[in-house]
Length: 571
Image (cartoon, rainbow, N blue to C red):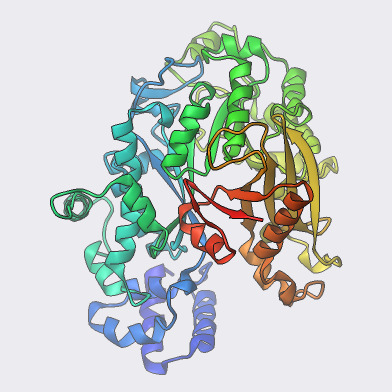
């Protein structure tokens, strides 16, 4: 049976029985089983599918909680317009203006979900953000806390006017969405439904045009004939209904030094995705990066000393390397203190038409890693990943039919996991231990506690403070004693808190016998107190936190105050 049949049945039943929350959940489950559906629609989804004449009757039966009932973090990837990289093009790089794949952003194919969304919205960051928020509401995902990722090229290399307008439009969209569709902390489903003409057909170009016109009018509104600035929209987002809890920018090492880092801080960035690609000079040179291994090392150090979290990209299977050299290179990321990534994306080299690498492959001068070879390599590498790193991805988010050589399966992670299981390989990275992914939580017999891992990185001292058991991690913080003083907010006796992350599922663990729910209240605060304790033990008198704009209020409650692009506290 169709999803529509589900709504046709459950909506009249809700109107007739006027259930409380507990009874409503049971009604949803019964209807799901009857119609062989997976995943119960949210109350908002039910409202969106209710006939107009019935909305006022059903609304009070469904919307009884304020915005916190929508709580959770969702990601919005916002793609910048196609531009050439400042250095030219690497030999493997697809995309770019007027490429074989069309007029798409550099290093993208035009077939990634985020690129297709950007194309539909004319690469307008305001429209992209609004469109994604609309989708999250319609599909029942949380949307009050947003992690923004700016994709599409070397963003820090763009001119200031473009960057400011692009980031301003993202923050303004988040701010406006809350102002338009919330009243007294309650989401106005009727207004939302009418504004976006729902239910609607995404292929209806006239509908899209009408919605775009309304949104662009809001985007371009002026107060006293003056548009708001990026700084004003960022400040406004601190207390907005829809908040940006983290902002990531992608860059290359030659645009990842102090000057670029300071500019990213100005725009509210908290994390940098840095394409290092290899640890070998010969490889970096051959593929046309037009920077050196030392540039990678310098950028990592600069960004760390400014407080950023760093998600490095590494590309096994490039020319001039063997499988053993690939494995050794990835292992070096964790043995060489010049690297030590907080997060890592492993992108096996893919081949696309229109690239130098494609010509080399056709001439028999290059053979990319197959799916099986990549899976073998990454499964072996997983043995060596320390507990402080999170493996974010093991393959590009590109449909397999787009590339012309290399990994031809989008579910590479499943191949890797199969090999690991067969060989009893255990990965200790953060992702593999997250409490929300645990499949054996009922077997957990250990109570979580705070542990501290110290290590040297980029000539500074790092402390990975985790709230964990031997198998599962519930939250963590990253504390750094910087190697140099790069900003006035950071003194000789300052400790940098580069990340604080608590997994929301921790609050629900009380139902398991090994866990007492009270243990998980204030996990973030416990981690912060431990960070402050470590700083004091090392004669530090100030903690500077690189905080997402929308999370500053949390730190304010702990005694921190805004301090330039950071929040800080004397200890």
